[in-house]
Image 1 (cartoon, one colour):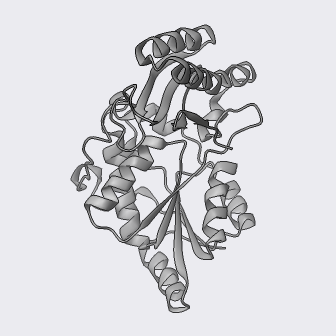
Image 2: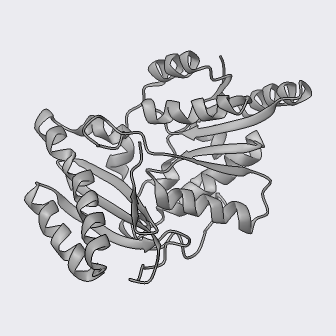
Length: 288
């Protein structure tokens, strides 16, 4: 695997791959990688792509400077994981390479509607930062396909709409959530958990499963979510949000919708965890 740190080097490597007739598969990350990230690389390799990954902790998507400062930077470990997974090229720029005119003078991409509420409501400006950096990375890499984990369900929706609205020639490939044996969705933020908090953390996924069961049985969204918030509180969480949204556009779900997604975010200790669960045709779909 080759590691580059500048846009010029990145484009040189991608150009050579294209001259060899390779399709470009792109995996954007913020580093501190885990098996969920590696599953994105594996999906790109299965499609016989020249796999480009990026590692960049994007300051534009953090509303809390302390959260940005403590976000883990583990480049050496990440390089080893990517190389072992068969990644071809790693782009690891610094802030000046990404925002040479400074963040205050950066053109900002705003994706309406799907970016509002949920994580967008809890973290003002977050998805503007996500959309902006992904847009820049797409322009730098010019991939044929880009791979995103479904754990960040709203993020995938934002990126899909941005690509469609701006007529970008990139296929967005969502990849199923990678979970620990007890159901906890893998996340870089799981490293913030103490041993006791890690045991409690599995309660978020359990709560989503209970919401799915209650929704299928009663289709009473308000009562289902009220009960679920109480259960989440009893499990030691501080609830940020629990919502049932329509899968197609993330509008609030109704009892008549046959494809919905249950989305949750909650704090345990210092960690803010997110997760989701799809229900299609009243049949629960478990992410592997």
